[in-house]
Image (cartoon, rainbow, N blue to C red; front, side):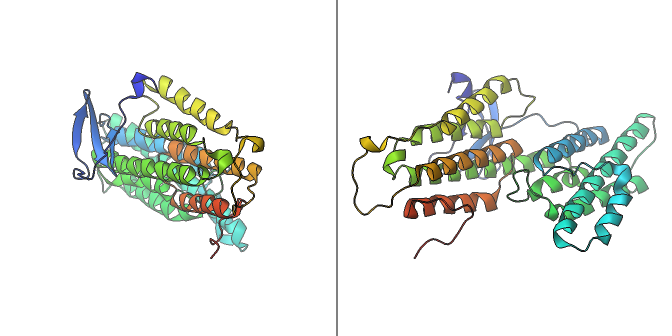
Length: 324
């Protein structure tokens, strides 16, 4: 890493400060959550316009990380609801529920946009306004339907993404920013959990014994990207660092069998399975990094797959109980 990335700080001892503590490191304010000092950013004014911009940005972010086909325009909400309520097949009903959630998110964004336009014309808008209540209703129902939606990987849902616009709508902007730092800390924690599991299991296999360095480099780049907004000037250094670290990990070459020591009573490891499992770990870290949201189910299942590979020499396509 270049010096521009030296601002990532992780608490190294057991004397943790209280969650939410703020300190300055090299003139950069950071907030402490989950063992990490996370970079902070200025909070916009708590206005209707600021909330509108945040909800629009969060809606775009939502559709960028969820499965395809959910970005249904708000005016088609009634059609989406009718189709969802008429569907009896469970699998298709899940997808239609996800489409309805997308339509409701877009309807809420449309309403917020109009409210801000009215406010700009001098019309006073308060929390009891009928349109404000309708906007909140749309966001709340969309959040409830969010349980039907999968991440673009198809592995699990990211419920936090569905709840974020409603939180922006219902709480001060400053409190919303604080909730994001909490999620970023949790994301960093899971990135390290995945990296630690990869190192702990793969380095015990002779062919992969020197894989730790590219894993650690990638995890560090991922943590830095997780705390960095796309509008930050540092992104022009941080994103290339992440991409190139991911490429180095994906291109890792195991040691040739002729160079490996003979170890008795060890499984015969499938090298292709091991490489695919490493790439799956890289992908999962990428998903968490880009969404800036933890994926606990996928993280837990990936760690189980690493443990099974160490014990059996084969990587299961889906998690399975460890052998007795």
